[in-house]
Length: 54
Image 1: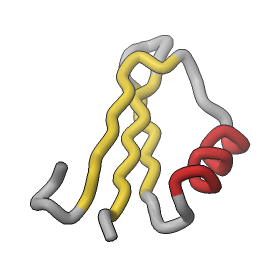
Image 2: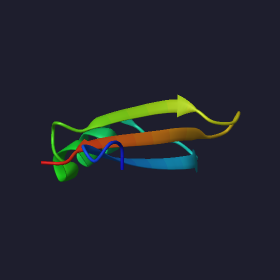
Image 3: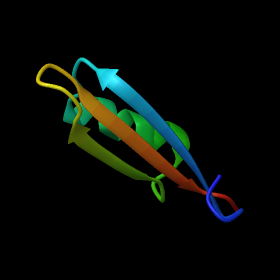
Image 4: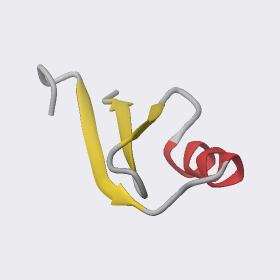
């Protein structure tokens, strides 16, 4: 929870994620969410999802 306004979900050491999986997340969670994918280790990525609370 960030300042009572948003919910942040973070997944570390994800072996990989493709664009269709990101779009699927947005369909399920809502288009107004923010999804950030960054390198975590040489083999994995970190996926951060920020969802505004309404």
